[in-house]
Image (cartoon, rainbow, N blue to C red):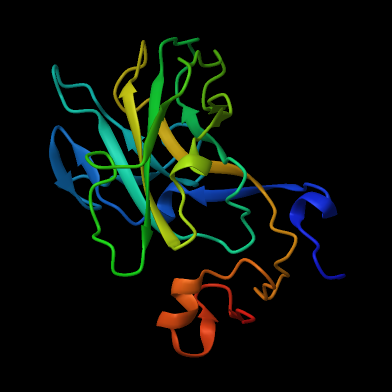
Length: 229
């Protein structure tokens, strides 16, 4: 690679990043109370009607006035994401009913963190939030559904010293669906690839300064590479 190359001069490449609901690390909130994988009945369960045996998170907001169900996640920001370009997100879920239920609403809240920054609730003191367009499900039973791609205002809120982010996925309205007919499969992100970062995690220009000074040897956690300094 010649000196002075940037992602812009190399050409933009878009990628996709998938996080299954089962691997999300936060607690699911039901009716205003935080629960883990229990509350006497499983939160993570096999897809109920289709017999697919895929693990989903069932959504139940059936109680009148109940706090919408939400699930959180915390992760390292992949070095291959070029954060100088916006991220897009969409929610993927199963609709377990043979009816074209309308008015299914989702929100996404997020917050970036650096080393030694305080870990907080991203819905209370976050960096941004989006509301996806109301979704109408297919009349096909156990159909795989997805919200429309929606841009996150990450360029304005991300700082060069940020190494992690947390986010919360909330089903604010099940619309015409009944309890447990919506089952969260995961979240998909669309990003612009940092072409200055190879598959081993080696970077030439974008290693965060705070990370390199704070971690002995500049080891990039989760990618198994080293940051060149």
